[in-house]
Length: 543
Image (cartoon, rainbow, N blue to C red; front, side, top):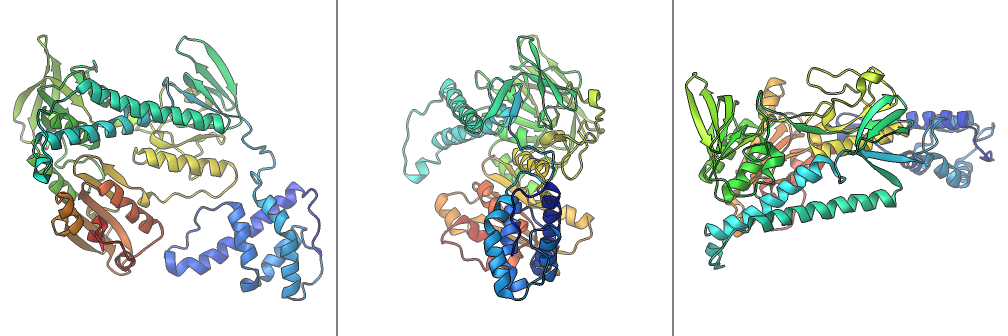
């Protein structure tokens, strides 16, 4: 008969968990290898492991698992005679096993997150994304698109006649702030509901177990802690010898709050941020010129074929592009506006005058003045914090995620890393598939991609197939009057495994998530094609 668990010794806990995890990993890898083609164990809770083991008793009848129970001291010595005995044992153990696998960690010193605090330098929670990034920019993109539809005949072509359309910029900006305010309050509510302490100020690490917080008033106090997670994000990269003033020479933050619509704007950088905010002001009437050092728009990571089509569409919308062009200087004019000095790839120089200059040459990790030197953590050449596969720095109990470590600077990537990091701290497996993290440019049309680009597959020597289809031939796109763009799918030439997908369309940011799910689960291109989809939908273009 099974031994009673009252209480189960921590050493037994550890041995039992380790043994079952090993057995489960072997069982799962063997069973799923043909489907995943990698045999990689996916992230799972120990409670899930317990359920799998229990459900697999009759099918597996593994003597090694039985021995694992014996080794852990849960099943007394003596031979298991038959399936009925096994079933009886597992039934009686079910409650105890569930409790065991729901324990917080296999670390005997771990006492759970009884107290969790979040130190935030902004007055409101949400960081860059919610306060001065993703959320306010999407609010302005949506509002400016509706204004543009009304002003330039799109609504009229659909039989919706609107006269005397006017722009109320202060109201549009208030709507943006309303969205931000609502969501920040939502985070505060979640903190209170989950007993997370909200601390405002600038945090600095004093020791592996101490964080000093300096408030806006200069008051300092110390928070003692067992673990520290650095999630300080990033900040706009400044242009050399040029200061942001928030009005004439602005970063993305300043471009979200201009007090009036400028007649002209120069974008330094035609990446994601520059194109999104440039699109906002272009729709409201600004003449926008983008100066880009690279030969393609969209920044690093975009498929070059998609980039060419994207630039062509934006050019039709009125944006002007100067590609493979270097900015050599920015001068603020005494009479207003600024002058941007540029040189093309042949060295030909010229000057551009604009009411506003938006510097959008990328972002850099917010990793200075965090007290890293106090604990011996060094930064890499790009100012990032090196971490291992469990997001731990060189100091084992200090972790880092998001924009301060390597990888794309995306809010959802940081979110996934934060969840995985905490799961790792509590003793659970850690896994993130970076090939399944999508990217989106929220212009109109949107551009979205996930997985490999064609350039990456070529450089890695992977044989692949390409499928393309234009939205002009898609029924739903025709009905919506949104036929700009195409889809490009990349598959493994030998196995048909889906390797990448790139979409230009007004709904690309939503469409790409189904493909991300497919890549995460190792689907083939045929798997997507043979999955029934409602008709008519935009995703039919991917089938």
